[in-house]
Image (cartoon, rainbow, N blue to C red; front, top):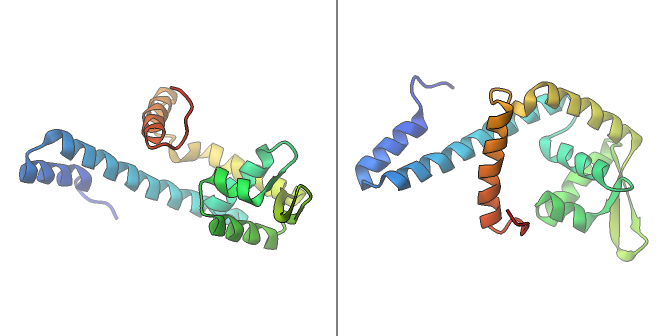
Length: 169
């Protein structure tokens, strides 16, 4: 659906008219824009990744496993690094395991824990899916490299302030 006007800009103008505070209407418009862009990107990624039998959450899990030293991580760490509830991480890994992209094994360092390990088929599908996302510019090809960097730094400030991580600026 495409509007002949920017509905978020219109909402900001109405907000300002109703409450008279430009800085708050701008903050509302910015937050709403971030949420809308998130919807657009997830929809685009999921559509592209469906060609590989993946969703974006499964793709992220494969990326994280591939970046680990030996291609495997404890389930608890996988969920924490993906910043999702443990149940969501388990569901994601179960789906990947059913597809043959991940194997689960007991964790030898933790008798109650489980390791998720990327398989060769998982590495192959990850490589192919990544090529497609890169060719698309991760949905942000309309921005220059400088604009991408600027946007990242602005959002990084919001995430840091929210306590997402403690790394200094």
